[in-house]
Amino acid sequence: MRRRDPATYGTVTRNRHINRTTWTIAGTGVMTTSIRKLEEDGYDEVRILTAFPALVPADITAALEHQRAMISSTS
Image 1 (spheres, rainbow, N blue to C red):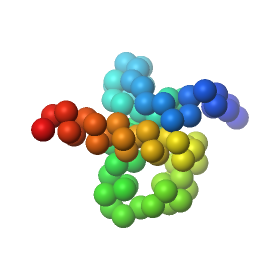
Image 2: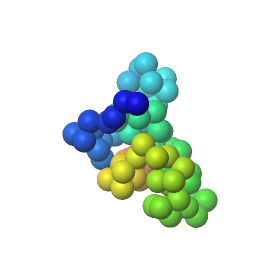
Image 3: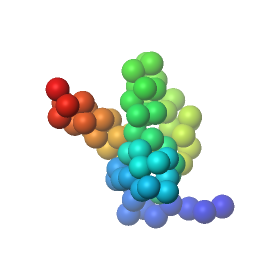
Image 4: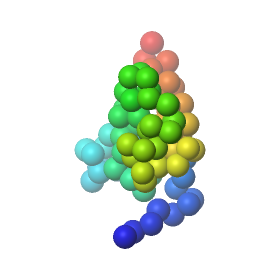
């Protein structure tokens, strides 16, 4: 099994070859919008980490901060 590079923890990126340039957590295919939607549905950090075992807590924080920044920049 392939392991993630710890240098990618907590990093949000986009790549045209992964999820059609949707913002994702670096080193995974997990979209930041997916994490935001789970949080909106009442999931806490432990449940999100259970749903996406490739993530670490820093990834969740980065995804939610990124999503909040995206929403506030469009308002």
